[in-house]
Length: 116
Image (cartoon, rainbow, N blue to C red; front, top):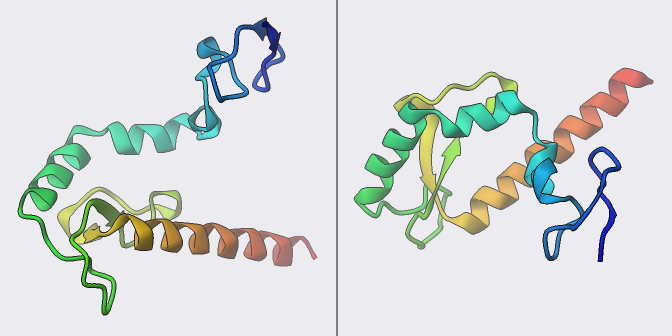
């Protein structure tokens, strides 16, 4: 059943389980600025990611016994970090998502403090 898309208000068939139509990206990824999307589509990042994860390294989070299945940026892309080997570290999905969420919450708090 057609309904209004959240991105630009077009009336179209939404992607199942999402609130955006396929033409507008179909999901939450559509809200990420194109510059940040490009950082993860970069061939250098993809090559380094594959090289690092090929050896099945342990998670770089202190005390974590898991094998890494994702790559984390030491200095986030949003803060100007690049896709160099020195800025990438192997991490398990659980800790990568936890650190990413913490960075986002810290950015929101800092933005709120600047507004006051």
